[in-house]
Length: 52
Image: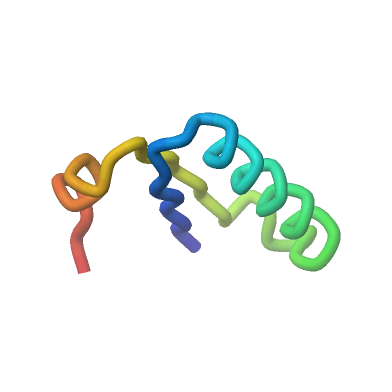
């Protein structure tokens, strides 16, 4: 599973990633290694690497 977090505020970006990592440990621990979280500070950066 790939998860992209896009936020221009560093604190909010880090908080969202922390929450997702804790959530995945608690509820998806057997799939935790399959979860890839990537952070982006700008939507343009995300769209540059996104593929459907």
